[in-house]
Length: 113
Image (cartoon, rainbow, N blue to C red; front, side, top):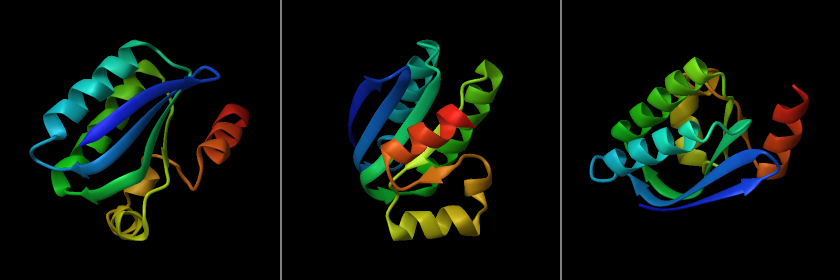
């Protein structure tokens, strides 16, 4: 897994690329925790470059949402490909966090909602 963190407005955006699986989930968990500690107004996880999201990766996202709720920082998911989106829907993970096609859509919706 490769990643890039950037700031737009007051939101932190984490762009994930490659695979989020058992081998990379520890790094992702640390990244998520450190990013939340920066207390952004919004955290966006951009999955558009993610090819594979294994069960450990889904678990890391759920844990991220739990931590973000404790800190009252909203989280949005952006750009998951059709396979990832389908699994999120089947397991109702899209109930935990809103899913958007683009970063612009997430920013517009989450900053007004």
